[in-house]
Image (cartoon, rainbow, N blue to C red; front, side, top):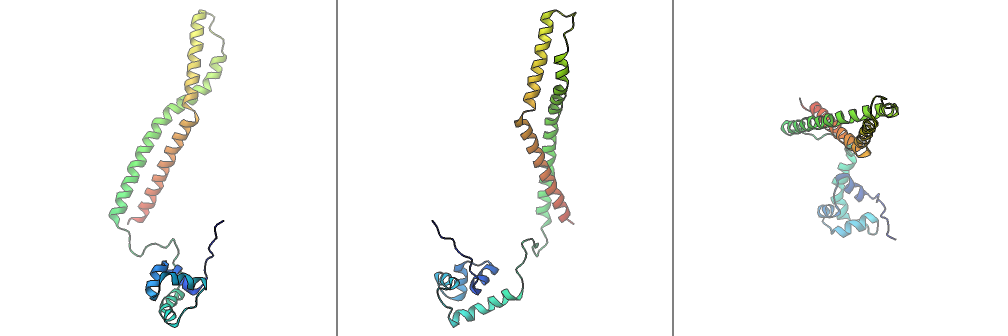
Length: 183
């Protein structure tokens, strides 16, 4: 069974996490070997005076302020050209997906209408004026409509419809967020 590493709380580890440094990068700043940083963080070795003197400026900067939140925006304003290009892409593809949804929705609506009407149509007695062969063909025709409606409204069709709808809504939400970012 593998060992689980514990998160070190040493000042060295805190400075390293605050600035997002690798052990090798911090070792380069401190003038020591990367393996030595691991030993110092784990408490297996004590820091020398030279290492402490090099660490103090970083530790002071880390103690001066809290770590920036992940949701903080970048300092620079976003480049409008990149945002406009993505906004155009999102709007275009959302429109294309909405058209595909509309094309899928019409047959689905027809299939639902057939499913609503078919029980009564199938239960109705045949017209006494029709010959039995005609009544049998009409009944078979209704059964084919029932099978077609069931096939059109299967789980796969529903999944395709909802996936398209979710993609369109996602692109529309992204377009709205991008439009808010633009002046």
